[in-house]
Length: 120
Image 1 (cartoon, rainbow, N blue to C red):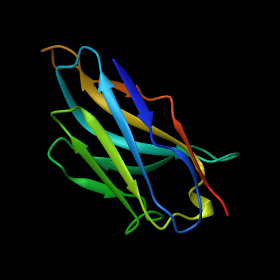
Image 2 (tube, helix red, strand yellow):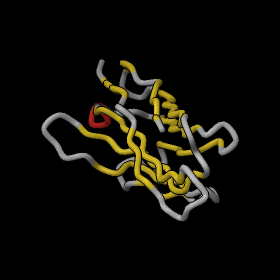
Image 3 (cartoon, rainbow, N blue to C red):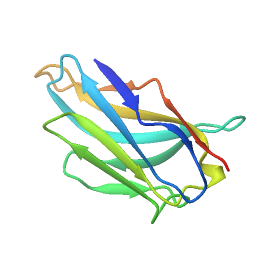
Image 4 (cartoon, rainbow, N blue to C red):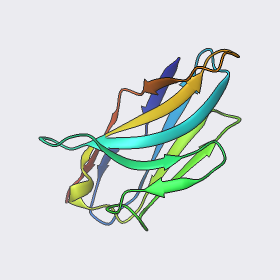
């Protein structure tokens, strides 16, 4: 199983970006998916989560600006980021809980990360 994140880049304050994360490989089902981020010199933090049923949760710092979504058929996770601030600068990582067989065992997978830089 692999998670491939894309969509990062350089954007000016107030701008927008949309991140994507595609899951591939032997996948039976996907449970919770999430985005985390890690800024230079800081610990990795949870940004947003979404369940297979579509329930969403956000960190206080991104509420009202970010929207997490998923396409279960395409096994793809998205993060729409609006009104970006310099403090949003970080490497963004996608995460997923995946079953890769009919056995009731879930495994955690991480993407390699995509850099988001917010600067004028």
